[in-house]
Image: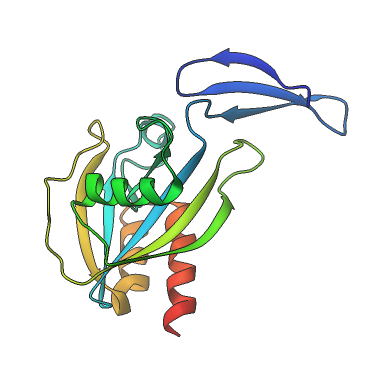
Length: 185
C-alpha cells in the first residue's frame, strides 16, 4: 500500500494513504509497537480495578482533565520480542502491581477510532484471586493519577457519576466491560 509519512517521531507517525475519493486520508500510526493490550483486572470475581488518568490531548482540547481507563500498554515498545501474553502480564504488574491467576483474551482487533488511527487493541480479562499489590505501581510518566476498586454491581452507576463529574470514559474500557457483562450474565 502507498503510505506516505508526513511527520515522524519515535512513538507516533502521521501518515497519508490514498482513499476512494482520490484525496489522501491522513491518520496516526505507532511505529514502535506491534500491538496494544488493555487489561480488565477482576479481583475475586467481585471488583474491578480502574485507573484514573490525566491524558494531555483531552486536557489540551478542554474535553476532560481526567479519564477512566484500565491498565494498558504497547507490545514490544520497551521489551523487544515481547508477546501479547507477556505484555498483558507485564502491564498488569507495572500499572496495578498485580499478578493474575488466569488471563482470558477476549478480542485482538478492537479499533477505537479507525478513521484517525491504525491502532487496534487486544482486550483481556485478568482474574486476580486476592487484591495484593506485589510491587509499587508506576504512574506512567505522571499519566496515572489514581486507582479505584469498584464493586462489579456498582460499575454502571459509578461510570455515570464519573462522566457527570466531567471525566471521559475510554472506549477500550467500555469494550472490556462489554466482555465482562457477557461473561457474568
